[in-house]
Length: 375
Image 1: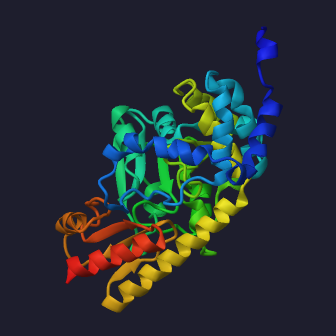
Image 2: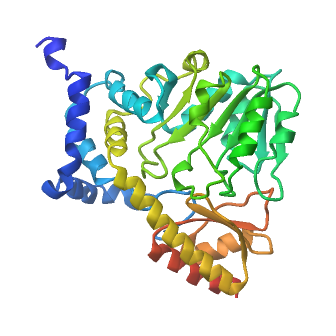
Image 3: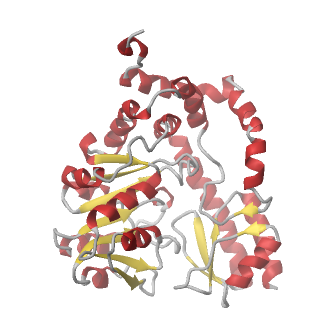
């Protein structure tokens, strides 16, 4: 059998991935496969309610499960030939060209590629304090100095101070920000991009983009065409519930992406992940339902915290930062002892407890444990 006759074309691959959307109602294979996986999963779960890692408790869409099931037929193939359908769909959705996109193993790989490419001993990395830490870790590995700029009193990025850092090669803006779940207003972002010199690369990490409800936020994805120094990162880990599958991407002008590709690991995304991501993009209900369920559970927690007089940072993501008015470290352990895992300590905000917004039942368990621990 020849390679040509043995291969499935990129176009037909995209078609059969999309055809899997009705799978859940017709095929029980996924459920039985998940049952067989229980022995594997058991050592990985401590039985606690897991509200510590900003994961989506609802998981991938049924269309994604169906597509992965179909893609098992191609598990023997290297995935690189089958990246094109996903890249083309991402280009269509974001109104850019295929050459404006790199996909990677979660946005984690994208952040690492960018930091490796645009920082070094003579190129500082500028980031907020606190924010998602991995960029700083990758920067130190390149020998770059990391300049941390404290968030404003409103928990937005202090973009004026960030833009003023000398010898900055790379500026990282997480919007909405992790761990604060706060946004940096759109007018401030636009002003900042106009001020940053073309020799400084700006990455805006929009991992939690789909959860934002305030009109004071906007994605900067459309601005990539205007700014050759702008990179926008997205992930399938959050609203699409694919944290364990690892898929993310970034959009930028081709000249930047060529520098990043030098550091890219070949075939970093599995063929099952490609299938799930493509199917997820075709399932708008995954986004709509995820946003709605997250908002409902978050509103419930807001109400319960208000009853007890606890202040919190208004959340534009699937997690929440609560000011408990005392060091969080012993509270984290006490919550764990009460069968609820919450976020770690963030040194810049030592009295703030980060909790993922899970299902309504999980948040009820959180409130019960929290009230007990804080009594």
